[in-house]
Length: 465
Image (tube, rainbow, N blue to C red; front, side, top):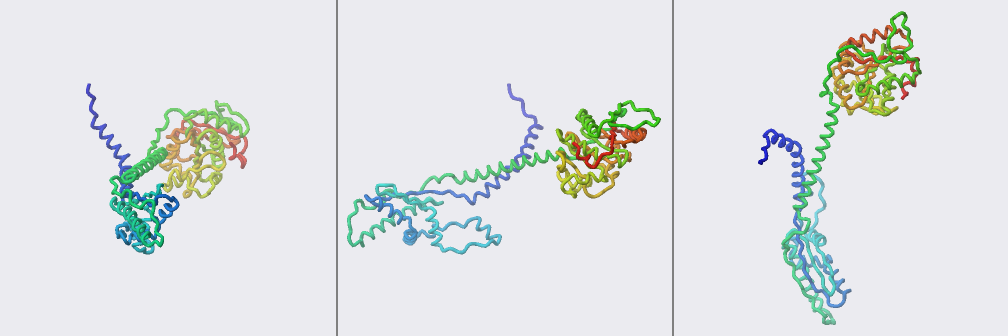
């Protein structure tokens, strides 16, 4: 049974994904490998074996020191004519520095450069029994063998000269001689240059791939908060749901009484009931809009207290839409921090305007800078998109809204199907609250809860949690 062929569309999709995810890392790896090439070269080692002394090990070590001395190396350079061959090639970093006008080091003589190469690459090791190994490492295998042999021959010449001019010549137990001459190496030393180049390429590929993956992750996080992808839900159909009226003590003054029970409890109890109501609604209360009948109703205080209470166990952000409420100005350490107005006008991003509230665990989007007209902000087209994006990120989005008096802006908020909390005046007429309820329902709000605190919120009320 033959395997079914891969559809052309699937093959094209795979190729596009490979190009999208691998093109940049492969290019980065190639660049890193190309940059590494000038700094790597194959290095070859050649070794000559020499008998320096037959009996006395102390004399053997001293003569090994003679072979590795700078004066002996200078004599070898003069006799063998290796100075020009030992000059190091100009380094790529030095050439680049010269192109950009960087100061260069003081000039060094050719002999000094050759001596430095010998000191860095020549090794003389006593092997015992009067033997010594002279090895040299160079990028040219023939040069490495010639240098090692030149030092071995130079030592024999020095030994013969010393014996001829000695006042009391004594025959040595074993005549110094070259036991094995150095031969050009066929294989370079490890690690091979191409291994270094390949390692640089792999490191560049892995680093670029990791950076690209991190960038995709960051884009995905920002995409989750991108208001351009938020589509406003259609306005809820049907009748508005009257949620419990919490803490009301107003009298009807002749009007028909409401069917919902009205409890008189303390201010903290009212707040606890309100927070419990939001928690019981769960995802249905992902967006909570807190407004009032007027600026003196304490809607901003209620929104702050509710958000802080919910933030004990949930991810909560408080959106300060009521830019005229003074209690919303001191929520961040910097009073001039970017906020909602900056986000609405497109001069700041989500990461710029979301701050940690100083008095609780919740996040907060302060009023921000610029416009101070609440009605204009409520009717802004981007507001519904921003709130919809935040609702997909947080468990609860609590909006401290001004009194809603403009039908167009309120209709956009209602399209998001929020839980609306209407803060009524303590001791106010029930008919005023009922009229406000009917007006909000006519604008499309479906879930409306009313709360009346039994006493005016004191200055410390915003700290309740």
